[in-house]
Image (tube, rainbow, N blue to C red; front, side, top):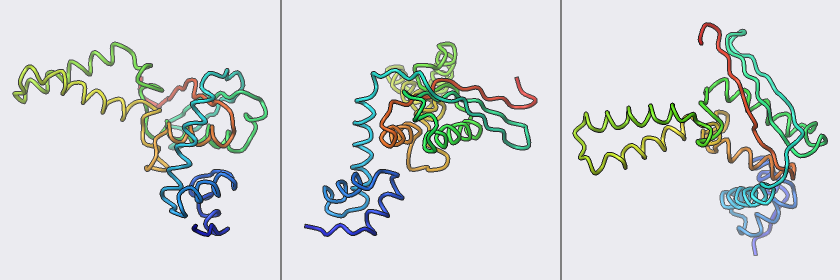
Length: 199
């Protein structure tokens, strides 16, 4: 049995943001292996998030972020279940970080389901034309288009994007961590990004 020291728990807390007891449990379950313990906590966070998926999110905040001396601005609405959580530092920091991420990466929508149909169709046409241009056989075209569309969603849908401040996780992973921390369902409801001089 691996001895779990306070230093190990502290290190895991800093890496994961999870509570002391959760960190102890994860390290014990993973026999002191730090990387496995981080994965253990992430999976647990996903399980917690899944349990809370059906709950209503009627509280929350609207967070703004202005960048490049007023050239780029973002407003994002992030919801949670209670007013208490909406006022916690973890929740407020999450909303601020999401607004900053949106300013930096300019997503098209929150998730693939929210991408306007016209945008999806336009992308499909472009990918099909590219595949035909390179001489790919007809029977492979749909597979190639689906693969490129999947990449498009990963790069352009907020929940699928790699988080700019921590490239080892997606926005979805980050959201699930905050759900695990706060114990409430949290939802990124909507956002608007403005850039001076563009339509």
